[in-house]
Length: 125
Picture 1: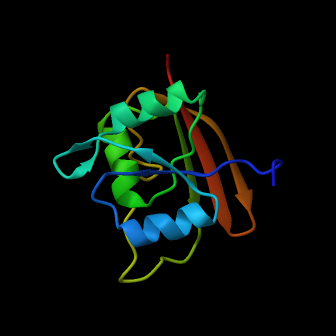
Picture 2: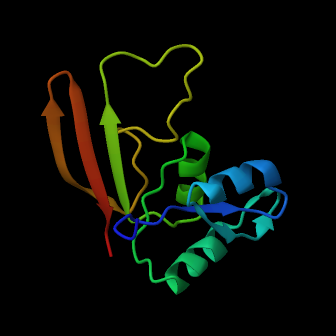
């Protein structure tokens, strides 16, 4: 319906057309992206999102995506959630942890939720 927030997916021209068509039928909107060395060109993607009127983006894509945004210097806020139990041998290691926050960030807040913790840092401007 019209009251739903649109969902955008960034995809390069080589993306699987069958998956893309299925997602489009479900209402997903696609943003065509440039690539650099086989990955989505992140600065250009953010320019495209800004042109759509987006000023804030939640990056949720796993360790590889998070690491890429950090490496490009495109992160203004870091939020870490941590549980007591490790994910397991096949889990993907986070690109950062609370003891290895990149330079230029300061801790904004931290909280506990039972056995789990939450911590947030923001970039010093």
